[in-house]
Amino acid sequence: MSDAPRHAVCEFCGHRFLQRTGPGRRKDYCTVRCRRRAQRRRDGQAPALQAARQPWAQQIADDLQAQAARLATAQSAGAGLHVLLGHAADLRQEVDFFTAAAVHDARQQGSTWDEIAVAGGVSAPTARTRWREITVRRRLERRARQSPGRSAGSVLSMPGSAPGPAADSPRTEHPRLLLPPRALAAALSYLQRASKVAIGDAARQADLSPSYVSRILSGDRTPAWPVVHMIATIFHGNAAELRLLWEAAQGLGHTTRPSLPAAAQRLHEALRGLHLAAARPAVADICATTVLDPEMVRDTLGGDHIPDWPTLACLVTRLGAQPAAIKALWEDVHYAVLASRDIFPAVGLTDLHPPSEDSTGTGGAP
Image 1: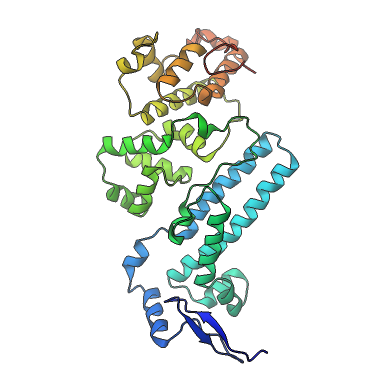
Image 2: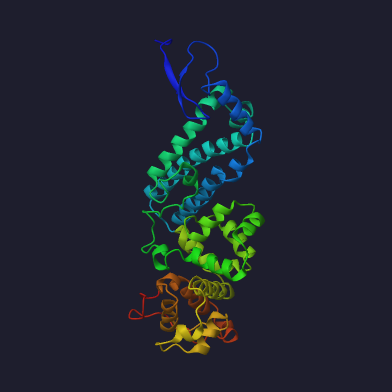
């Protein structure tokens, strides 16, 4: 039975061919022509093909970072063992996908199977069988089918799809649902338009592909925080103002109790981020048909004032978000004030009041 004819798939053209039997190395290509064309591609004689797509491993690494953050958040929130182990299992599976994608990228950059075998701690025949291109493509197709948050489209776009929300998150409200749709993308797009920096120029400065930057600006891709920070800086924006929007897009929680200055700064940055995502409406438009005072709104967005909760909730609503999106940040400020009464007169936060059950968009303070 070992000499029975069997077929394989050419790694270059994808056509089926009759695989040789008996001893010796198995063929990867259907013809010598396909083998030579594949070698020319690896030698860099087809650079346009390489530049047209984002490396698969980098995109999966971004998703890995988000998954690790979910595990850390669940641990900090005291989630049950089954939740923690579920996150750990997801991480292990994603690491396997990353390994396959990293090998694929290395092959595209010209690495030999012997070099990959040494890096992977396996024999060259094992590496060739385990990580051949058609096998990697099929594994990533399976990854897309298993993960609703990832696109089921072309294989090349699958690793760059945004991670789906964690269904077993210990938080009662998912932060992604509390902000305007694609708020992070809206804020970055506004910065890009305001800066007049072309997408191609930004991509070159960030060492990313233009198509990848376009997907970020359209909301089809949520990258790791360092990438968001870099792109916002290239567009002459304050990256800190986008942190809340990025955390919401990644489904991350907020569990720490910062100092009063840090809490106030984070709240003001979050408010400016919401203002940015709303395309920076004028103060007069924000205050129209409301009881909001224009001077108060200017001072709040400028970082010089923190209003009481009902007023702040009204302002957040006018910026297109649900007040609960920043409730925890306001409560951090209130908690820090109560814990630092000796500096209370110096910071000018005398309008702080704990949120009541009947305040807009909130529940009681913890």
